[in-house]
Image 1 (cartoon, rainbow, N blue to C red):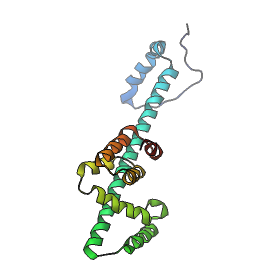
Image 2 (image 1 turned 30 degrees about the vertical axis):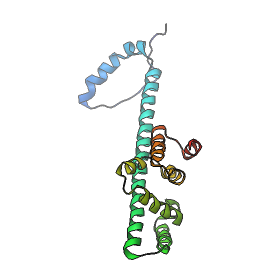
Image 3 (image 1 turned 135 degrees about the horizontal axis):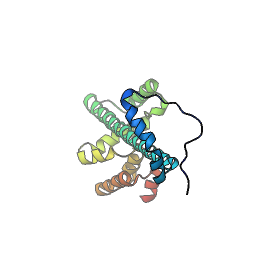
Image 4 (image 1 turned 180 degrees about the vertical axis):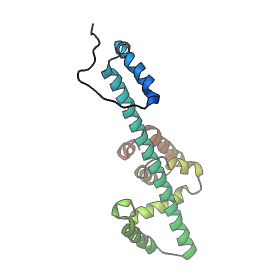
Length: 178
């Protein structure tokens, strides 16, 4: 049996007067508490809880960012279609838009001519289907592009969109599944 011992050395802590009774109770209960769990066990549980919450928050933040990105891409596609129809603009407007957006926001943001054409196609594909638009907003752009390019049947698209959402398939995993 391991005997309870205080750690060696000294520690200094400052607390407000309103917390003094809680600190006293904490100190008085240490021996009893550590008969059930060691400090190390308590700390590791605490650490795992914090790590789990950090991972959850990061994943949630990534989902929100992805959803906003997909909404933006849908909007850009919609604007391209509307302007081309309203003003009879040709294909060169997409190239000019790409150059101007890359100049403003940088090359790595996703405003290549090809990606703008994909945004246009994306809008045309889902503009009349609110349910599918909500679903595509929940998965990454690369997986959306893969599904758009390889799957023509609407029910199959919905199946693969839901699978990516539910199972977290990467683009490569999705490609293998298709």
